[in-house]
Length: 157
Image 1 (spheres, rainbow, N blue to C red):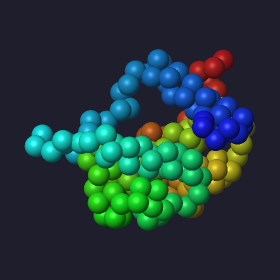
Image 2 (tube, rainbow, N blue to C red; image 1 turned 180 degrees about the vertical axis):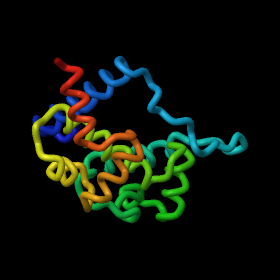
Image 3 (cartoon, rainbow, N blue to C red; image 1 turned 60 degrees about the vertical axis):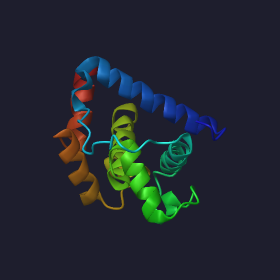
Image 4 (cartoon, rainbow, N blue to C red; image 1 turned 135 degrees about the horizontal axis):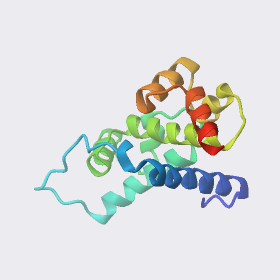
């Protein structure tokens, strides 16, 4: 949304709108409990959080592109391993899982807000193959992308 690009800003708004509508309709049942506990004996500084924000922003702005850990952590100026550990500690999810979740949110929003083909949605969401997309999508939502679209369209009538 900070890119200044009108189309990107509108897409971000649509994705957030879809997320809020989903929560309103289904409740936050799809939100999972944290997989990692934050250590109580270590405090997080605002600088550490700033580094994580930089990584999250980079992921969100480049989620349609192939992302390596080194690409994501390079925006912080920190050592890759330290930045990855910091991300996991703050976000309570590893970077790769976070990237997949963001791509899935984008894909689900595109499924219900557009008439694009599923292969185009997979590509625009940053998945490198259709099989990878289907596997992650089904594991996360319990349905195929086409079933989610059909369900959404059926509920809109």
